[in-house]
Image (cartoon, rainbow, N blue to C red):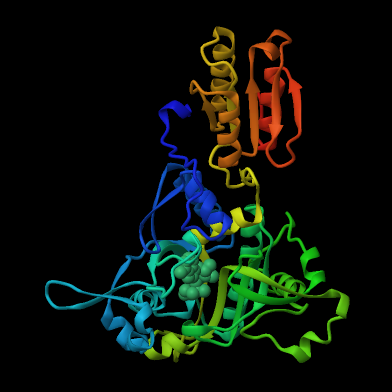
Length: 447
Ligand code: 5CA
């Protein structure tokens, strides 16, 4: 992509309405524009990152054996009357009346709709286990939408629902989600710690929230510092293997880690003092096991092997897809702007032409752009007639992890400069070596 043909409305001024760094940087980098309180348009750069995050979520869900689908944003109030949540949900629910006077609502979550689909189509234990999920916009009329995409009113969520014959199977689904979430967040360059939490309006006994530690986080958290040493990494896991998934859950949840909702001073005091930490965190996901709460209320049963009709055991599992952009930026930025982890970056590398209009520099940039593109990478080539300083500032602000700088002086010596956004370190290399290096970083083979 050539920057001269792209739509990247960066702001020179720091927007005064933004209180936290991720919100400021998303506005300054031209990623989002507020449409109304807590509701945003996703401009091209922001939309690209949002799609990359969605893609990782899809890949990891499918890897875990969960099935993608799509449910609507608008739902009928009748289903929510069946579960009893139409009144319970209160003012957070956006209620709408259609032209026939029917009560509708903009879905804040989808337990009722998915349970209705399940009871209409599934009748036997032989169809279980089943986990369905979608990535869809939600609406919660938050009293205080704030911090940009962190606490929006309209936001994108992955929500998945498991249906199982027994509690034991449903707890396996819970564990499977925990494992898949660890992988998902690590691929985005994040450490998200599962913490025992409160189930709120979703209900149920077992629930963990995933928290990214950040000073600007809305939740107060208490944990044993040892937990931050845990990495899931690229270990192999068989998602059908109950013992393996259970072992991962135990490994990641046996140390003290709780949000303020479930914090217990007496338990916390058992952690050696030097390892006790109190901090703030951003909740990027939550998993729930709630048993037969919805299947009892809505009559979602299956026939077991003896032909008895039994209510299915369920859980729901959410990832805050749009919130993740804010969380990643909170965890990865410096004074000059965003630093995207390679896993989610909107463009794989930037190309900065120091002397636009110089025949040799232009040709070298065109060639780099073509070669990287041919390898399946997406470079962003700053081909504007601007000073070098302005081009560097834009690249730093939008946070591409790698930058190739091309100028007449280097080209005389047959080199370009490859710079890491994270470390600021640069090296001079012949263009083909710079290409090979960037390709290797993203796991692309150079022919
Ligand atoms: N039905 C369950 C799981 S599918 C559910 O709704 N869970 S939730 O309420 O915890 O939401 C899931 C995730 O969505 C949260 O962990 C959070 O990351 C994200 N989220 C919730 N509210 C907002 C909001 N107002 N703005 C942005 N993200 C949000």
